[in-house]
Length: 166
Image 1 (spheres, rainbow, N blue to C red):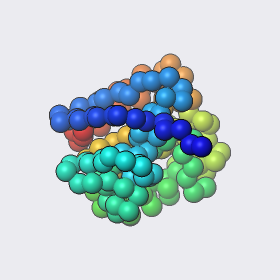
Image 2: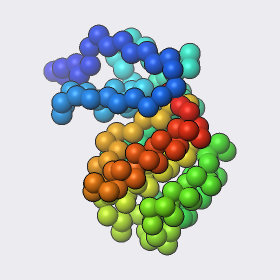
Image 3: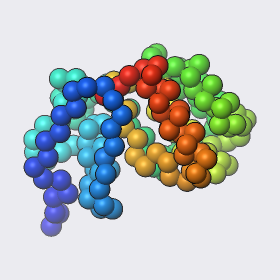
């Protein structure tokens, strides 16, 4: 028997901004984010982003979601960023490369050889540079030390100034 994870949730975000979803472990935060992104279907109710219904059948949801422990092809970081830019015409390559340099990411290093914090940073850069209407980050500072967290918050603010999202 499967127990419902999320029940009776209503959420409306009408203004561009940076929002935080807080809750205990196992409360359903990741399930909610994946559902909003169209990565998993819900059993009842509806999810709309920009007035468009979202499900796993929706091709372009207008949402970019990166979860903790994201796994990317085992490619060098610079090549990974280039491939993302080729499949997403609205991708901000300049921002991604600028952030790669700012965080001293070795563009020649393969993704799997990065530390947890650096893997998280690559995933976050890809997500923020996507220029989607909605950006969802699941545990975006996982593996970051205190200095890297402050840098992340600066990067997030800079990204929002350049491309306000909901």
